[in-house]
Length: 484
Image 1 (spheres, one colour):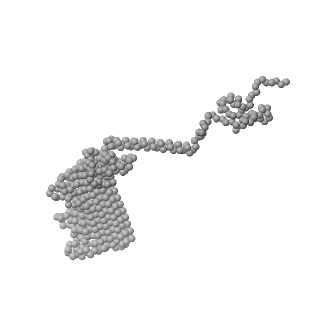
Image 2: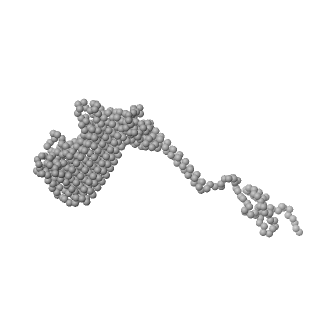
Image 3: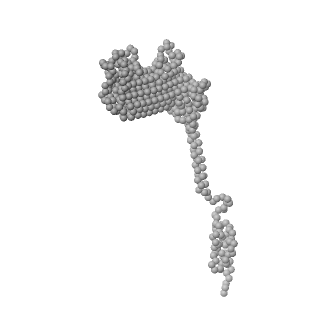
């Protein structure tokens, strides 16, 4: 017997009715176009083909890609990095600008921001209102604006001082004689600049020490960020006018000194107008030029720039630079107390010195004592002695390398010589000089060593009992020549 089951037959797997009641329900799908096989058909599958079913957990948005490509992700990250860098730059700029705003408005350790000589005090600084517009021909045409201010310093001060500190500044320092009779030196300061904001950051102040006073020029210790150097550059022209005396005698200055980096130094014809007990110039990367100067003690220091001019000293003269030549005419006066000295030093450039040895009138019978030294490298060292007292004592030392060493001695010279080089035999040239004393004595030259690389000996006038001096010339790879 066949009993018919009244329970409805279960729908085939994969049919729409079964899928609709299966949690979670997938979206509706279209049935296959192929007719289903009957359940009782041999080999019929109860599941539809996988290619006819699409499962999706979220609705699809037409026209939008499922994921970003690797190139798109890199581009987005790069743009984000640029944005972060820009915001960080703006922040840093704001902080630095705020710091410099504080400097301009007095919120700095002034003048503690600068390294000043011991016991130097700063006071009485110039205000913006004290500047006067400079309407004459511009001294420095590369700057559009120029202002001027004037000061006075008593010439009977123990010391007159000039110094500069800070960045974004350079200039010229000039000392001249004035025909005006006064007890004060007049100082003119002209500043050339691109913006008034740059000028307002400069402080021109009086400086004092226990024994002296002078002028100081101060600019911010560090360049202002991010403005370029051209906008903030200042160029100062400092001119010192030394007055005349009522009776026409030379003006006496006890001490004049500068500490002015990046300032060129010039001195006019002061030899007959001013007598300096001490004068000292210190600069860097700028030349020093002297038309004529007389000082008991003088010192000139620079770097990477030449020193030139006419000097006269009764005690000591020091000239120092580097990578630039020294070309000078020097008068050394001596009073027998101790040797008057000349010391010159440079590098990679030549030394050319014409040195006149002079005797102070009224001194003892001795001809005086003088020490002259010139040291350089990779260039020549050349000495000439057009004048020398009888019975004077000269100690000369010239040293270089890869350059000629040459000395032309005055006929009054008596003493030893030491000439040394490599590759060559040093040469002694006799010039046929006549007896400077007028006694028609014969000059003799004696050699103790005469060989390649070294010549030693002594030169003297017959019958002379002078103590005598010494000459030492050294170089390498090039000749040494002594003219007597």
